[in-house]
Image (tube, rainbow, N blue to C red; front, side):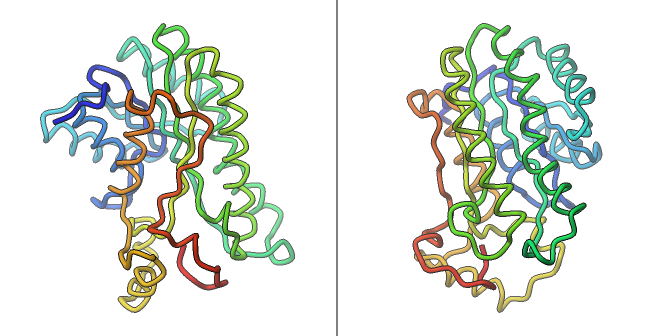
Length: 265
């Protein structure tokens, strides 16, 4: 198997747990990075969810460790990076995968919900990166960061607070790429479309709704956590050494079609 130049590198997956035993975007990336020989630090607010991901990785004979962190807390983010460095001695890759949703307009959205979405979807990336980047620099090998946005940022369909937060992720990504390129650190963004993950199906989804999601894709297929994980692995790897500040849309062509307010995405 191609190791993508990731063997023995240390990758931190922020939001690497998942609901039940399913494959979410973070868990998929963690497993794929481990298969390529990376030592994976799986972080989640829910330690049990992170430990489930780690168990899946270790069952395949690969290396991983679980870490709990409240990524909205600056001191806890520093403790997280310190713990990863204590465990592995270096940090090379970061996948910022933490996020929550919201469906309201600016008129209907409670202010506390708006602030919570922006805090979880944007501020957590800011805080984890604040401490991860110096760790990458001190490791002496440069590094690579992927921030997870959404096609909602480039094809708004009324999810106003969520859309605003994911647009901010793109702007943050590009600014970070400029700031830290001279340090040898690449920063890119993945914008997933309608992917079938535990975050989606635990809320309940009918077969008709799933069929509509597939139909929305030009390819006629529904994405999943592995599709996002494969893209994250590529961007974190040496194969993407000349790519930085970019937004990679992974949506089966959904964003090429005109949006509908209630369509999947």
